[in-house]
Amino acid sequence: MADVILENGIRKYVDKSVCEKIKIDIRDCVGSTNDEVKALAIKGEQEGYLLISRSQTKGKGRLGRSFFSPDSTGIYMSLLLRPKCKAEETTLITTAAAVAVCRSLEKAGVNPQIKWVNDIFVNDKKVCGILAEAGFNAGTPCPDYVVLGVGINMYPPESDFPEDLKQIAGAVLSDVIQDCCNKFIAEFVNSFFVFKNCLKVVRNG
Image (cartoon, rainbow, N blue to C red; front, side, top):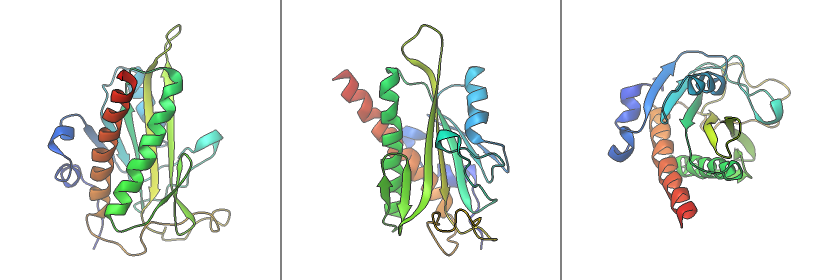
């Protein structure tokens, strides 16, 4: 039994109000989903483009760190946003994403914790990292785009984690559950867009 990420598998769990807002692109391998989406953002891709890769060769974390992204055991995705907000408010996007990840994991029966603000832990091991990167046009206070990257270790890698990560990194699940990745992605998208709308209300309020 395999847990295969498929567009129709994701969309059957996405709320109707959200489904039309996202464009799903699934690939087997990329360097970095964030880098791929940033390049498309610069070319004019619309908000809601969601790139999901089954592996990454140059996964990115905060402060220039790498993010271990083995094949078919994790979810590596980046969502393109074009928020109408000030630069300092973009940190709220990471906050909303962290809460959305936790809500999605809770629905899968997992008890996650946020290491504020961009790491998610399960059983004292890091299972998820979040990286939001903004791009600006000269002379404007608002970002032209924000790329929201989420990398999550759903299952342990077949050859285990590298030595330098064994004491730090963990996986959400130990055994494969069919359709779990598709459900998680859909639940994340559903929750994130709810929180995104709430942030808009707060700013306008």
